[in-house]
Length: 341
Image (cartoon, rainbow, N blue to C red; front, side):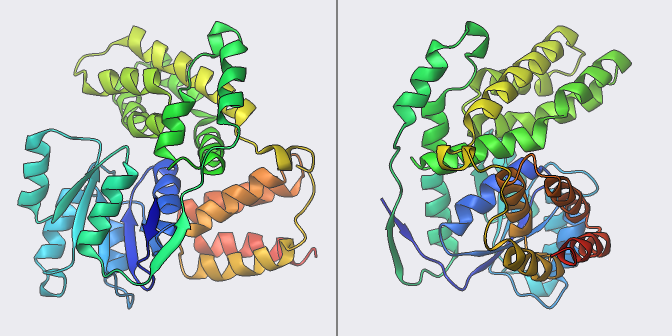
Protein backbone atom coordinates (compact mmCIF):
# COMPACT_ATOMS: atom_id res chain seq x y z
CA UNK A 1 0.00 0.00 0.00
CA UNK A 2 1.40 3.38 -1.01
CA UNK A 3 0.86 6.31 1.31
CA UNK A 4 -0.18 9.68 -0.16
CA UNK A 5 1.82 12.74 0.86
CA UNK A 6 0.41 16.00 2.21
CA UNK A 7 3.74 17.71 2.72
CA UNK A 8 3.28 21.36 3.63
CA UNK A 9 -0.01 20.75 5.43
CA UNK A 10 -0.35 21.56 9.11
CA UNK A 11 -2.89 19.98 11.47
CA UNK A 12 -3.96 20.91 14.98
CA UNK A 13 -4.68 17.73 16.96
CA UNK A 14 -6.98 18.38 19.92
CA UNK A 15 -6.81 15.37 22.23
CA UNK A 16 -6.58 15.11 26.03
CA UNK A 17 -5.30 11.51 26.24
CA UNK A 18 -1.54 11.24 25.79
CA UNK A 19 -1.55 7.71 24.40
CA UNK A 20 -4.17 8.62 21.79
CA UNK A 21 -2.06 11.65 20.82
CA UNK A 22 1.03 9.50 20.32
CA UNK A 23 -0.84 7.06 18.10
CA UNK A 24 -2.49 9.81 16.04
CA UNK A 25 0.77 11.72 15.58
CA UNK A 26 2.54 8.54 14.51
CA UNK A 27 -0.11 7.95 11.85
CA UNK A 28 -0.13 11.54 10.60
CA UNK A 29 3.66 11.66 10.28
CA UNK A 30 3.46 8.90 7.67
CA UNK A 31 1.70 11.44 5.42
CA UNK A 32 4.48 14.06 5.88
CA UNK A 33 2.11 16.30 7.85
CA UNK A 34 3.22 18.86 10.42
CA UNK A 35 1.26 18.30 13.66
CA UNK A 36 0.71 20.55 16.68
CA UNK A 37 -1.53 19.64 19.59
CA UNK A 38 -3.78 21.10 22.25
CA UNK A 39 -5.06 19.14 25.29
CA UNK A 40 -8.57 20.64 25.30
CA UNK A 41 -10.92 22.93 23.40
CA UNK A 42 -9.89 26.06 25.26
CA UNK A 43 -6.21 25.58 24.44
CA UNK A 44 -7.16 24.77 20.86
CA UNK A 45 -8.86 28.14 20.45
CA UNK A 46 -5.78 29.85 21.90
CA UNK A 47 -3.57 27.99 19.43
CA UNK A 48 -5.81 28.86 16.48
CA UNK A 49 -5.73 32.51 17.51
CA UNK A 50 -1.94 32.50 17.22
CA UNK A 51 0.00 33.37 14.07
CA UNK A 52 0.03 29.74 12.91
CA UNK A 53 -2.25 28.84 10.00
CA UNK A 54 -3.78 25.36 10.12
CA UNK A 55 -5.23 23.40 7.23
CA UNK A 56 -7.29 21.03 9.37
CA UNK A 57 -8.34 20.46 12.99
CA UNK A 58 -8.78 16.96 14.39
CA UNK A 59 -11.05 17.59 17.38
CA UNK A 60 -11.73 15.12 20.16
CA UNK A 61 -15.31 15.50 21.39
CA UNK A 62 -15.18 14.56 25.06
CA UNK A 63 -12.48 16.50 26.91
CA UNK A 64 -12.04 18.32 30.23
CA UNK A 65 -12.05 22.12 30.52
CA UNK A 66 -13.85 22.58 27.18
CA UNK A 67 -15.30 19.81 25.02
CA UNK A 68 -14.92 19.62 21.26
CA UNK A 69 -18.50 20.52 20.40
CA UNK A 70 -18.36 23.74 22.44
CA UNK A 71 -14.98 24.67 20.96
CA UNK A 72 -16.28 24.09 17.43
CA UNK A 73 -19.35 26.28 17.99
CA UNK A 74 -17.14 29.10 19.25
CA UNK A 75 -14.80 28.75 16.27
CA UNK A 76 -17.66 28.80 13.78
CA UNK A 77 -18.90 32.03 15.34
CA UNK A 78 -15.61 33.63 14.23
CA UNK A 79 -15.60 34.48 10.48
CA UNK A 80 -11.88 33.65 10.28
CA UNK A 81 -12.63 29.99 10.93
CA UNK A 82 -15.88 29.65 9.02
CA UNK A 83 -14.29 27.45 6.34
CA UNK A 84 -11.62 25.73 8.43
CA UNK A 85 -12.13 21.94 8.15
CA UNK A 86 -12.86 20.50 11.61
CA UNK A 87 -13.15 16.73 11.92
CA UNK A 88 -14.58 15.07 15.02
CA UNK A 89 -12.34 12.37 16.46
CA UNK A 90 -14.29 10.35 18.98
CA UNK A 91 -15.12 6.91 20.32
CA UNK A 92 -18.84 7.77 20.25
CA UNK A 93 -20.05 6.15 17.03
CA UNK A 94 -23.86 6.24 17.04
CA UNK A 95 -25.77 8.14 14.30
CA UNK A 96 -26.91 10.58 16.99
CA UNK A 97 -23.28 11.30 17.87
CA UNK A 98 -22.53 12.01 14.22
CA UNK A 99 -25.51 14.35 14.00
CA UNK A 100 -24.36 16.27 17.10
CA UNK A 101 -20.92 16.75 15.55
CA UNK A 102 -22.35 18.06 12.29
CA UNK A 103 -24.84 20.30 14.13
CA UNK A 104 -21.96 21.87 16.08
CA UNK A 105 -20.29 22.81 12.79
CA UNK A 106 -17.89 19.93 12.24
CA UNK A 107 -17.25 18.80 8.67
CA UNK A 108 -16.59 15.11 9.18
CA UNK A 109 -16.40 12.33 11.76
CA UNK A 110 -13.48 9.95 12.43
CA UNK A 111 -14.13 7.11 14.84
CA UNK A 112 -11.64 5.98 17.50
CA UNK A 113 -9.76 3.70 17.44
CA UNK A 114 -8.60 5.27 14.19
CA UNK A 115 -8.63 3.01 11.14
CA UNK A 116 -5.69 3.84 8.86
CA UNK A 117 -7.64 3.52 5.62
CA UNK A 118 -10.43 5.78 6.88
CA UNK A 119 -7.87 8.32 8.08
CA UNK A 120 -6.31 8.26 4.61
CA UNK A 121 -9.66 8.84 2.92
CA UNK A 122 -10.48 11.71 5.28
CA UNK A 123 -7.15 13.44 4.63
CA UNK A 124 -7.57 13.04 0.89
CA UNK A 125 -10.95 14.74 1.13
CA UNK A 126 -9.87 17.75 3.18
CA UNK A 127 -6.17 18.34 2.40
CA UNK A 128 -4.26 19.13 -0.77
CA UNK A 129 -2.22 16.13 -1.83
CA UNK A 130 1.37 16.75 -2.96
CA UNK A 131 3.83 14.31 -4.49
CA UNK A 132 3.13 10.63 -3.96
CA UNK A 133 4.98 8.90 -1.15
CA UNK A 134 6.20 5.66 -2.69
CA UNK A 135 7.34 4.18 0.61
CA UNK A 136 5.15 1.11 1.16
CA UNK A 137 3.82 0.13 4.54
CA UNK A 138 6.25 -2.23 6.23
CA UNK A 139 5.36 -5.88 6.48
CA UNK A 140 5.63 -7.86 9.72
CA UNK A 141 8.95 -9.61 10.25
CA UNK A 142 8.63 -11.70 13.41
CA UNK A 143 5.00 -11.20 14.38
CA UNK A 144 4.29 -14.95 14.16
CA UNK A 145 7.17 -15.66 16.53
CA UNK A 146 5.93 -13.07 19.03
CA UNK A 147 2.37 -14.38 18.83
CA UNK A 148 3.65 -17.91 19.49
CA UNK A 149 5.62 -16.69 22.50
CA UNK A 150 2.44 -15.20 23.90
CA UNK A 151 0.49 -18.38 23.20
CA UNK A 152 3.12 -20.45 25.04
CA UNK A 153 2.90 -18.32 28.20
CA UNK A 154 0.64 -18.90 31.14
CA UNK A 155 -3.07 -18.28 30.51
CA UNK A 156 -2.90 -15.22 32.74
CA UNK A 157 -0.92 -13.60 29.90
CA UNK A 158 -3.51 -14.06 27.17
CA UNK A 159 -4.69 -10.48 26.86
CA UNK A 160 -3.22 -9.02 23.68
CA UNK A 161 -4.38 -9.87 20.18
CA UNK A 162 -1.16 -9.01 18.37
CA UNK A 163 -2.64 -9.62 14.94
CA UNK A 164 -5.23 -6.92 15.64
CA UNK A 165 -2.55 -4.62 17.09
CA UNK A 166 -0.48 -5.15 13.95
CA UNK A 167 -3.48 -4.34 11.76
CA UNK A 168 -4.04 -1.03 13.57
CA UNK A 169 -0.31 -0.31 13.15
CA UNK A 170 -0.55 -0.63 9.36
CA UNK A 171 1.28 -4.00 9.35
CA UNK A 172 4.39 -2.27 10.69
CA UNK A 173 5.90 -4.42 13.42
CA UNK A 174 8.17 -1.67 14.77
CA UNK A 175 5.20 0.70 14.98
CA UNK A 176 3.23 -1.97 16.83
CA UNK A 177 6.04 -2.42 19.35
CA UNK A 178 6.25 1.36 19.69
CA UNK A 179 2.56 1.49 20.58
CA UNK A 180 2.98 -1.26 23.16
CA UNK A 181 5.71 0.84 24.73
CA UNK A 182 3.63 4.01 24.59
CA UNK A 183 0.69 2.24 26.21
CA UNK A 184 2.93 0.99 28.99
CA UNK A 185 4.45 4.44 29.59
CA UNK A 186 1.06 6.16 29.59
CA UNK A 187 -0.77 3.66 31.79
CA UNK A 188 1.78 2.09 34.14
CA UNK A 189 0.42 4.01 37.16
CA UNK A 190 -3.27 3.70 36.20
CA UNK A 191 -3.96 0.38 38.02
CA UNK A 192 -3.00 2.04 41.31
CA UNK A 193 -5.14 5.07 40.41
CA UNK A 194 -8.08 2.80 39.66
CA UNK A 195 -7.63 0.97 42.93
CA UNK A 196 -7.65 4.25 44.87
CA UNK A 197 -10.79 5.42 43.04
CA UNK A 198 -12.54 2.10 43.68
CA UNK A 199 -11.61 2.15 47.34
CA UNK A 200 -12.75 5.77 47.61
CA UNK A 201 -16.05 5.13 45.86
CA UNK A 202 -15.27 7.70 43.11
CA UNK A 203 -17.24 6.17 40.25
CA UNK A 204 -17.03 9.27 38.07
CA UNK A 205 -13.25 9.08 38.22
CA UNK A 206 -13.38 5.40 37.31
CA UNK A 207 -15.59 6.14 34.30
CA UNK A 208 -13.19 8.85 33.09
CA UNK A 209 -10.34 6.33 33.06
CA UNK A 210 -12.60 3.83 31.29
CA UNK A 211 -13.31 6.45 28.61
CA UNK A 212 -9.59 6.80 27.92
CA UNK A 213 -8.98 3.04 27.89
CA UNK A 214 -11.85 2.44 25.48
CA UNK A 215 -9.85 3.60 22.47
CA UNK A 216 -6.24 3.18 23.60
CA UNK A 217 -6.72 -0.50 24.47
CA UNK A 218 -7.85 -1.26 20.91
CA UNK A 219 -4.61 0.07 19.43
CA UNK A 220 -2.60 -2.63 21.22
CA UNK A 221 -5.11 -5.42 20.62
CA UNK A 222 -6.34 -5.55 24.23
CA UNK A 223 -9.87 -6.33 23.06
CA UNK A 224 -11.24 -7.69 26.35
CA UNK A 225 -9.98 -4.59 28.14
CA UNK A 226 -11.58 -2.40 25.47
CA UNK A 227 -14.92 -4.18 25.83
CA UNK A 228 -14.90 -4.01 29.64
CA UNK A 229 -13.92 -0.33 29.60
CA UNK A 230 -16.70 0.43 27.11
CA UNK A 231 -19.28 -1.29 29.32
CA UNK A 232 -17.96 0.48 32.41
CA UNK A 233 -18.10 3.94 30.86
CA UNK A 234 -21.62 3.37 29.51
CA UNK A 235 -23.02 2.33 32.89
CA UNK A 236 -24.81 5.07 34.78
CA UNK A 237 -24.75 3.11 38.05
CA UNK A 238 -21.64 1.89 39.91
CA UNK A 239 -20.48 -1.54 38.76
CA UNK A 240 -17.58 -2.06 41.11
CA UNK A 241 -16.98 -5.69 40.11
CA UNK A 242 -16.58 -4.60 36.48
CA UNK A 243 -14.29 -1.77 37.59
CA UNK A 244 -12.10 -4.32 39.37
CA UNK A 245 -12.10 -6.47 36.22
CA UNK A 246 -10.92 -3.49 34.16
CA UNK A 247 -8.13 -2.89 36.67
CA UNK A 248 -7.00 -6.53 36.51
CA UNK A 249 -7.15 -6.70 32.71
CA UNK A 250 -5.19 -3.45 32.46
CA UNK A 251 -2.49 -4.86 34.72
CA UNK A 252 -2.27 -7.98 32.55
CA UNK A 253 -2.01 -5.87 29.40
CA UNK A 254 0.77 -3.81 30.97
CA UNK A 255 2.67 -6.97 31.88
CA UNK A 256 2.54 -8.16 28.28
CA UNK A 257 3.47 -4.72 26.94
CA UNK A 258 6.55 -4.59 29.15
CA UNK A 259 7.65 -7.97 27.81
CA UNK A 260 7.16 -7.39 24.09
CA UNK A 261 7.40 -3.70 23.24
CA UNK A 262 11.20 -3.40 22.90
CA UNK A 263 12.71 -4.20 19.48
CA UNK A 264 15.41 -6.85 19.76
CA UNK A 265 18.06 -4.57 18.30
CA UNK A 266 17.84 -2.20 21.30
CA UNK A 267 17.43 -4.79 24.05
CA UNK A 268 21.17 -5.21 24.67
CA UNK A 269 22.10 -1.51 24.56
CA UNK A 270 19.23 -0.07 26.53
CA UNK A 271 21.37 1.94 28.96
CA UNK A 272 23.59 3.50 26.30
CA UNK A 273 23.08 7.03 25.03
CA UNK A 274 22.60 7.42 21.27
CA UNK A 275 25.56 8.89 19.38
CA UNK A 276 23.42 11.88 18.37
CA UNK A 277 22.04 12.44 21.88
CA UNK A 278 23.30 16.04 22.12
CA UNK A 279 21.81 16.98 18.75
CA UNK A 280 18.50 15.40 19.78
CA UNK A 281 18.48 17.60 22.89
CA UNK A 282 19.13 20.66 20.73
CA UNK A 283 16.25 19.74 18.46
CA UNK A 284 14.00 19.16 21.47
CA UNK A 285 14.66 22.71 22.62
CA UNK A 286 13.31 24.03 19.30
CA UNK A 287 10.35 21.64 19.39
CA UNK A 288 9.31 22.67 22.91
CA UNK A 289 9.53 26.36 22.04
CA UNK A 290 7.29 25.73 19.02
CA UNK A 291 4.89 23.56 21.04
CA UNK A 292 5.43 20.86 18.43
CA UNK A 293 3.15 17.89 19.15
CA UNK A 294 5.91 15.50 18.11
CA UNK A 295 7.85 16.55 21.23
CA UNK A 296 5.93 14.01 23.32
CA UNK A 297 6.74 11.22 20.86
CA UNK A 298 10.44 12.15 20.66
CA UNK A 299 10.82 12.32 24.44
CA UNK A 300 8.95 9.05 24.96
CA UNK A 301 11.05 7.20 22.37
CA UNK A 302 14.29 8.61 23.76
CA UNK A 303 13.33 7.72 27.33
CA UNK A 304 12.60 4.11 26.34
CA UNK A 305 15.89 3.77 24.46
CA UNK A 306 17.91 4.68 27.56
CA UNK A 307 15.65 3.05 30.16
CA UNK A 308 17.72 2.26 33.25
CA UNK A 309 20.03 5.21 32.68
CA UNK A 310 19.56 7.96 35.33
CA UNK A 311 19.10 10.51 32.53
CA UNK A 312 15.84 8.76 31.58
CA UNK A 313 14.20 10.18 34.72
CA UNK A 314 15.11 13.69 33.57
CA UNK A 315 13.45 13.06 30.22
CA UNK A 316 10.28 11.90 31.99
CA UNK A 317 10.24 15.12 34.04
CA UNK A 318 10.65 17.21 30.88
CA UNK A 319 7.85 15.24 29.22
CA UNK A 320 5.55 15.78 32.21
CA UNK A 321 6.20 19.54 32.10
CA UNK A 322 5.55 19.67 28.36
CA UNK A 323 2.32 17.69 28.66
CA UNK A 324 1.12 20.10 31.36
CA UNK A 325 2.12 23.03 29.10
CA UNK A 326 4.69 24.15 31.69
CA UNK A 327 7.00 25.10 28.85
CA UNK A 328 9.33 27.34 30.87
CA UNK A 329 9.98 24.55 33.36
CA UNK A 330 10.51 22.03 30.55
CA UNK A 331 13.05 24.32 28.87
CA UNK A 332 14.87 24.95 32.15
CA UNK A 333 15.16 21.21 32.83
CA UNK A 334 16.35 20.63 29.28
CA UNK A 335 18.95 23.41 29.55
CA UNK A 336 20.37 21.86 32.73
CA UNK A 337 20.57 18.50 31.02
CA UNK A 338 22.29 19.95 27.94
CA UNK A 339 24.86 21.73 30.13
CA UNK A 340 26.08 18.36 31.45
CA UNK A 341 27.42 17.41 28.00
